[in-house]
Amino acid sequence: MFSLFHNLDLPSFSTLFNEINTDMGNGQIWVVLVSACLMLAVHAVAVLGIAGAFHAIDNVMTRRRIYGASFLSYFIAILLVIAIHLCEIIVWAYICVALKVFPTNPQTFYFAGEMYTTVGYGDYKLAEQWRILPIIISFSGIFAVSMSGAALYTMMGALLGHTGQNQNPKSGSGF
Image 1 (cartoon, helix red, strand yellow):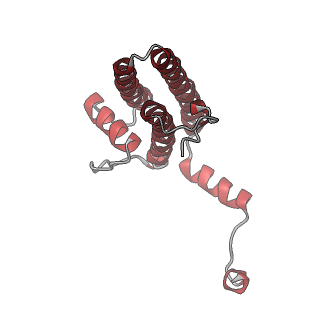
Image 2 (image 1 turned 90 degrees about the horizontal axis):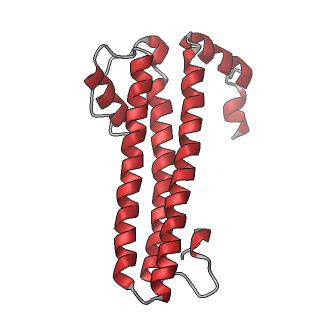
């Protein structure tokens, strides 16, 4: 297998990175990358807070044998997670508006939503300096949805009683 790549003239990582950075020609993209990282950190804290609150409510309700309230709290947790994702799409839209990626605000919102959810339905013409923007937005959406899915999965496991006696439902190992 090594011989397959041995004859190729592959650039070093630093050369490749420098070429891509030069091709983008846009220092603002680093602000976008930092924004994406901060948004994911805030998302993680918010989802952990929602999951923690759910588990606390679920424990109290289970001890009191009030089972319907746990289902209601799970439903509220789902709504809060959806709201967080919608807020993140709006934040991405504002970032794109501030960077003047598109001429109209609705077009910017639809672009942010499609990239965040990785639907990719629209046919958006981006300036060369913004070609990497869909990749950044879609990666943030993929990771955010993954975090949300994992949290909702552990909440569902606790709700349905699938967690074992020695398992902590907050540990994420609800198998």
